[in-house]
Image (cartoon, rainbow, N blue to C red; front, side, top):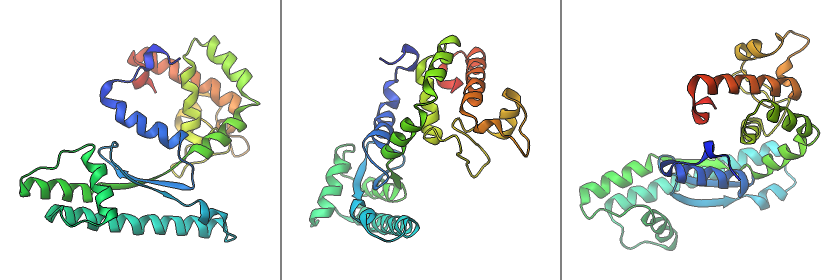
Length: 235
C-alpha cells in the first residue's frame, strides 16, 4: 500500500509506468529504445543476453552493447525521417515501428504536420538500460541494515516509501561515487553531507556509512518537508 502523499497524478502516470518497468522488468542486459519526450512510445527492446554469455571481458561487452544500441538508433532515425516523406511501402520492421507510434499518436493527414511530427521524433530517440538486476543486488546489500533503518524511519515518522531513494540513487551501494562528487547509498553531495553528519576528512567520509548517512537523510528529508509542505518537492 502506497502512502497517500505519494499518489501519482494522472499527468505523470506514463512516466511512472515507464520507469517502473525499467527498474522491475528490464535487466542491464536489455536496452529500451524510446522517445525521450513521450515515454509512452517504446520502439524496441534490444536483448543482449547472448552477448553477455560470451567469454569476452566485461568492458568489451559494455562497449559492444553501446555500439550496437547506437547503430540501431541511427537506423531508427533514418526510418522516422522516411516516415516524414511517406508511410507507404514499409517492410516488417518499419511497420512495427509505425504501429508503436500509432498507439500514442494519430498520424496527421497534412504532409507538413506529418513531416514536423516525424522529424521531431527522429531527434527525440533515447536509449535506457534496464536496472532490474541492479535493484535486486541493492536489495541483497540492504538486508543487514534494514532492521535498524526501518526502525529509525518510524521514529522519525516518515513514510517508508522514502527508502526507495537509496535504490534509485545507488542501488543501495554504500561505496557508490558519482562523477559529480555524490557518495554513498543516499548520494549526498559534500556540502550537504557536512551539514547533516560529521565533517568528512581524508580518513573518514560518513557519507559511505549506511547508518550515519540514513539518519542524516531522514533529518534532511524531514526538514525539506517542513519547508516545502509536500513530499514530492521535499524529495
